[in-house]
Length: 300
Image 1 (cartoon, rainbow, N blue to C red):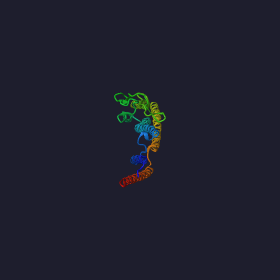
Image 2: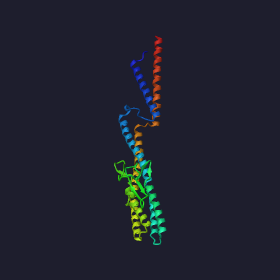
Image 3: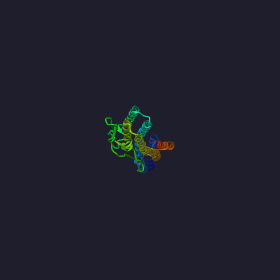
Image 4: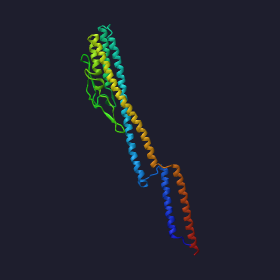
């Protein structure tokens, strides 16, 4: 009995196809991926590539927002310390203007206020990771210099007035810095100017009317600083919200990408078991046919 060559060829093709299926399923099970190459599913691969780009963009923004947010938090904390110093200065101004101060008392208050001015200048020169926070876009330039030789001491600003921004997903641009001149003033303006004027008037024994005017000017300057701080805090809040949204979007994109290319282990394992069973059955049939053909050849 001779076995039909066409039948043998068909069995051989089925066996090769079965081996290929087993290899593919084994690869899926070990890698966890249902797509091993572009040819497996060109559409899914293209969609996965697009999702990967979106995931990378979201992750880049989240990482950037983390660094920028930390910088803004340091700036906000610094402004909080400045507010504390100005509150002390206002208390000293009230003390100096109570009508009972003598020259010695005034000298002591002026000295304390000079110390506060020095501390405020130091805070205004705060840096973060090697960059000054309140220099506008001139991060490498120390924003304020205090001239202690002048009477009263005077602080001047060396930065610029540029406001830097960060773009969040959706295209909105958020301010991330506060130029020092808009927060602290310079020379005779803002907190720096009001403190200098107050120090000079107390040192010279100015009238209570002048001291009242100085105190009001310092209070107004403090309000301006608080307004600027509110802008920073609002921007920081929106940045954090955008970062949280980007993290959520990234997680959703990862799930979507996974559904395109990830294999289901349970399903793949079942398919692999079935393919191996079929493969063994084909091998058994071919072995049986081969043995039968050898037997008939011997009986001739």
